[in-house]
Image (cartoon, rainbow, N blue to C red; front, side, top):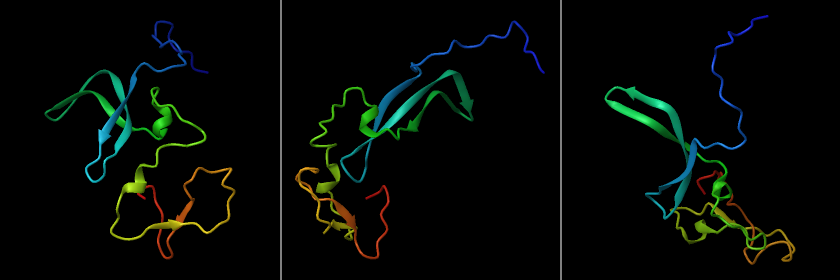
Length: 121
C-alpha cells in the first residue's frame, strides 16, 4: 500500500464551489442566451500566444442553475422557442388527449412525421 508523504498539501473538502460563475452566451440565430459555467483555474495557462485563467463549460442545468431564476410550477419554464420560425416544420401539436389540469394552456408537441427531434428544436 502506498502512503503519500505527510507534507503534501490537499485542498479542504467543500460542498459549494466558488470557482464557477454562471454566465451566458448570446445566440446569433435566435434571441437566446445559452447558460454556461465559467470555471476559474488555479493559475493562468498559456497556449500558443493565448493566456487564460478561466474557461466556459456548457451548463446542462438550464435555468435551474441560475440563482436568480424563479420557476412557477404551474407555468413551467418560459416557452422561448414558440416564437421562432424554422425553414421546415419540425414539431406539431400532439393529438394525445391530456388533462388540461396537468398542463398549462400550451399543448404538448410531437415530432413531425419523418423528422428527428434534437435539442436544437
